[in-house]
Length: 223
Image (cartoon, rainbow, N blue to C red; front, side, top):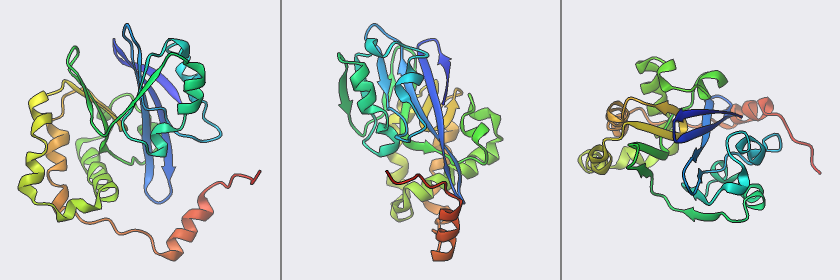
């Protein structure tokens, strides 16, 4: 994990998860520096990750007052209990909603804007502009079809309308848990997702491919 400031009020705690056969999925958490500091998501729960120690590089964990979990999947809650041990005054809030900070125009998004990327370096890049627009579009559509296979059965008009609130927000930047920061607004990101219902459906691995992927994955010893 590494940390950086993406905005005067926001730090990124950047990590990634290698998905064999797919790519490297960014896994970001965020710190909103404020009178009552907020941590958004708590990263991966893997033995070689120390979320509280990484957080301490940008903020004393004891100063955390709010922990916002975008949703309770394991890749968003991995460091939660260690953080709560280190932040006894923190309160936890969890919901499926995104967060728009109206004071700075930044939208913090969960799984909506995600993309598995070809290298770990790109997955932890400090700006999505480090890849070409075509590469980003292809990776976004791949993620949409993997993470939301139901998208192929939606009414395209209703699906497009569901992005109305985000378009009305018109955020200046989008910080997603599964994508490097996008600091030029959300217009292109949304336009790509509007094509997801018609994108080629993702076909998962067969048994032979699954066994090959498992063979590539380091095994943790059983305690």
